Image (cartoon, rainbow, N blue to C red; front, side, top):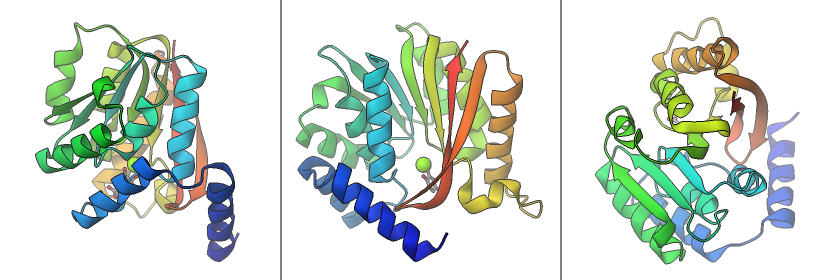
Length: 219
Ligand code: DHB
Ligand code: MG
């Protein structure tokens, strides 16, 4: 695998299968202009989330980590009338940018943005209807906390996706003792050991480089 080859294939796949999309393209342009980090999911990953949510007929989606709303728009577009994405964002400024992009995309009525640290916001969702789909894409240090909430707030059979579980191979670098990678490893260990999950993971090589997602179903 060469980086140039992988980039060329990714461009080809995006051009062939996804193409330009006004609302998504403006959402990315706006978050770049606002100086947000370039860490939203790649187009192929965004559409994967969308298709998975559609395939399972998800009506209620929980997203942890809104950033500028790019993945939120993909997810919200998967929902039937009356469906809802609850998305949690710690940075009020990110949430404002996301709100504008989500509204402009025409699915604002299906998206509720909760501003605050996810660990503080998640307990507030406990009384609500269970979620069909959970996308975890926030501070990696807290992945086990978020997985625990996903298991509590999701219905049996719910799909749980965790972004960024490979990080250019850092997950298996014994010299990497960062809190971020420790959080990723702890999350994967939890998916393996906690009987509430059946899980696998896939490495990805896309516009955002070499990374991966974990996929789990709630038992
Ligand atoms: C980072 C976070 C992400 O969710 C991502 O997809 C890529 C990078 C980060 O914090 O560096
Ligand atoms: Mg991510």
